Length: 338
Image (cartoon, rainbow, N blue to C red; front, top):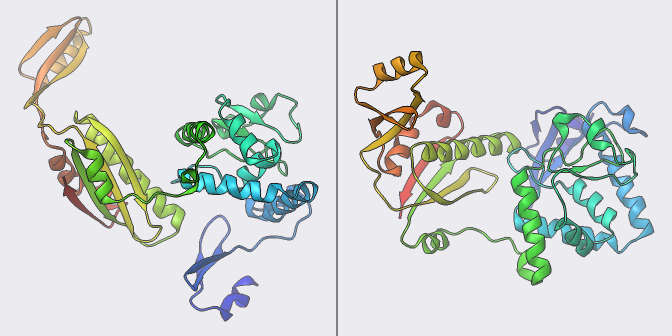
């Protein structure tokens, strides 16, 4: 039904997901139109998207009681966007708009939310309707638990903050503390990372910038691929003995992403020590000695000096660019060293 109606708009794209939806662009705004069932109770939902109008109704009912909370919710969302912890997509793992609605209404304002966030402990539970009477952690599906558990007022069996990562949970707490100590408009301004700033930040260290071209496709899937590519490069750098002081990535939600790594400015030694099994584990020691010609005992373990494959981080990344794992997740990677 919806697909036929949307034909009046130019270039409507059907996006496949757990429930197909539609995208089209007008006046530089991307519109997403999602078909939902007209349900009265959450139990009637066939797909999670069917509950969206019920969430909206819940928010509106609460705003009727306290209309000032509408602006408080806007502040909470602007704050999270500027802190880069907004969005429940798999590549973001942040606070969804719905979770921020619930939290701001629960705490009755933006400042009270921040004051309470500073005191949050891991796996604290926000249960607006007191559905679980303090026993949510025992009764909820363990796979759906997260650093902050927010019981959905519409679907109490659901943790609305299930995707929230520990990193974003802690960063939100830190940002809340920083704002409360010294309130400033800067906390609501999203900072775009510039190459000039990164060069300045790196100072005497080594800065590696990777300009990454993304594939076309659904935002959540492409974002997830880019995040996996970033984590893969980071992991390989660490495993090869390179010291990373700072790292990050940004994506314009279209085709261009930027990965950056600030590393210790050094050429690693030609050899490194590989620690083997305990000396009393004779079978494994035998296998270790077969692989390595020159071995020595240190403490209670057999060790060997092994020739390092990559002494410079750029050489490792150059080799990784040919890796199947990265080729499946990125279209092109260009490297720049400062």
